[in-house]
Each structure stands twice: as C-alpha cells, then as structure tokens.
Amino acid sequence: MESVKQGSACVGLRSKTHCVIGALKRSVSELSSHQKKILEIDDHIGIGIAGLTADARTLAKWMRNECLNHKYVYGSPMPPGRLANSLADRHQRTTQTYVRRPYGVGLLLATHDEKSGPHLYQTCPSGNVYEYYATAIGARSQSGKTYLEKHYESLGDATREEMILHALRALAGCVSGDDELTKANGSVGILGKDESYTLIEDDELQYFLDKLEVEGTLGGGDDDNDDEGGDAAEPAAEESKEDSGDAEAMET
Image 1 (cartoon, helix red, strand yellow):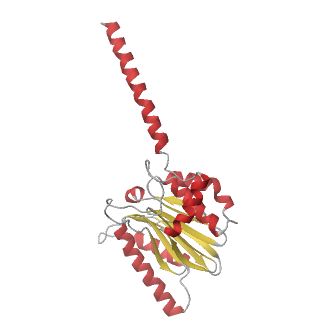
Image 2 (cartoon, helix red, strand yellow):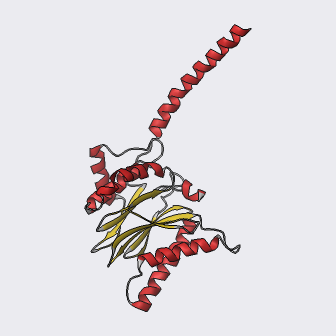
C-alpha cells in the first residue's frame, strides 16, 4: 500500500458516455524516456497504474489473457465487473500465501460495458475493489481528489473534450514542486460509447494543454504554498530563537 502512495499520480473519472484516466509519467533521469503509466487491456478496458511498474505489467499481461480467453470461448467482450473482481481476488491471494509477495501496485480500470455503460474501478494490493465516479491514487493525489470532489456531480453530462480537460486539471494539481504538466510527463486514456480505447499523449495532448494554459489552470501543485509557508516559518523561528536568547540573558 505504501508503494502505491509513493507511485506517480493517476486520476480517473467517468461520465454517462465516456471513462477517462490520466497519469503522470516519471523518468529516471533527463537522459531516459518516461515510463508508460496507462496500458491497454482490450478495446473496452484500459488501466492506469501507481506503484511498481513491473508488477503492473505482470497483471496487465494476465488481464489481456483473460480477455482473449473470454472472447474465444463466449464470442463476446469480457464483462468489466467480472474482470475487476477476478483481479481483486488475484491481489488478495498473494496476501494469504507465502509463495508470492503482494503486488505493490494500485490500478484504476477505465471500462465500458455495452449494457451498463462506462465504469471506473480501483483495486488495491490488499485485494479491495471499489467503483467510483471519480478518484485519484498515487503521490500527491489529494489535490486531484479535492478537485474531483468539487466537480464530480457535473461530470455526468460532460462531453468528451470536457472530460479530458477535467482529468488534466486534476492531474495538474498532483505535479510536484515547480514542475508543470507537459506533453512529455502527461498522458490520457479515453474510451466510451462508440469509441475504443484511445491513448492521448505527446503532440495530441498539447492541444488540450494549450487550452488549460489559456484558462490559467495549468501549473504545479500546492508545493508553492508549502514553500511560502516554509520561507515564512524560518524568520519566525529565528525570531523565537532571538527572544529565547534575550530571555536567557535577562535570567543571567
């Protein structure tokens, strides 16, 4: 669970027609490429990950096999709810046996069902599974959750473009320090009614980032406020030291 909290942030939200996941990509150094945080499972299922990428890739491979086997046997797409529950069972089994360690990754599943529409699920290393209107996981995800809590009631009737912009606004609050959300470190996956899984990144993502820049909502997280508080606290601490020193001098 701790590895999920320290993983890069991932947000998810759904409307009546679409489900969107957005994720921050990390690079080991300036010389390396960014790690992918959104993976395709099937035409109607995509996942966003926070935690150990290697564990997520292992689970993604298993999920793809489950979808292929279901389509081969029954001739129809895998029901998303069934896959989410099977995934949670797989997480839970590792906590009960000494053969394997638990998977150190939390997943957001963006799915679309032909009968019931879009769904957003979250799974934990403990084996819990939840369904959400909108949520965020990973490092500094509280900023994203706060934004989504304010706006989730208006997501139901949102258009495709509005959903992507909401995801990016929530994601912008999760960026650490003086960094900004850019086309290099951001990615968005979307799927929905009459739309198969689509990954939006690089130049395609820049179009939406430009819109946010015009709004003035594109920027780092709350670290600016934290830094201001830290700078303000230092002089106060120095003043208190001087006061205590004066008090000691008075006593002597």
